[in-house]
Image: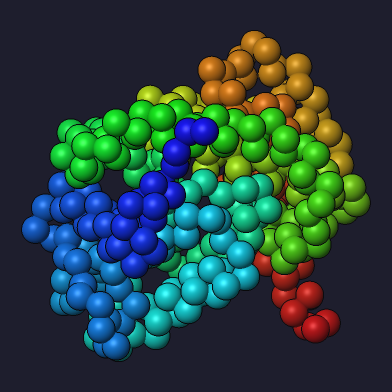
Length: 324
């Protein structure tokens, strides 16, 4: 069976694997950011930092390395929350962004938890929160010509296998996602902006939209985790085309109180253009993910389903708050 980053644990034990994983991340970020990247020695007063970029005179970028090789269960989720909270509550610096570095790839359910937690924290603290999975880190090491030098000979011989294995596992998850979504509690999305916009537009069949949003989020993470600039560019182009489809339909079918017709027509256009204008070599972006891009745009407050959708959303949110 092909090896993944468990090989670090097999060779060096849990403590050794954690140390080596953090060392690899430190060397990578030093190559990317130069002298601005700093590894913080572990101590009781480390203020929730493994690696930082910048200095304490201005808001910094923080990278947290967690050697969770077997995925993230309840214990690992709590460790992630605790690390982030320590960084948020620190008094000696201000944080500009927070990035979690993992040696593994997340399952669909794990990614759902991450996506929901990230969205909540991003809105609450108004900062960028990012996930670097194992395949992304390996791809970045290759880009920096550090692939061979950061690992001993035995590990170096296995890295190509690791990268291919992680990519194949991620593709399996994407192929299985429609089935896995049946097990997901869609109510966890209820407070998100894109859902509130749908409610405010009197769109009642929202569960399918939540499903599509989840697919788009997972597809985007899968592309970004590969660290391939060309694929990220293609993804940006695809998302731009989908935004343009909405814009054309919005001009024709926007309504003051009902967004059902607009949403239906945009979905139909995406279906019609799936194999032509929206055709893409990115296998992660199937039909559901393409539809879900609409709700990613809505979550970013870039599109909506009613005339003057931003003003109407603010009023709707105020009414909900008054009722609570």
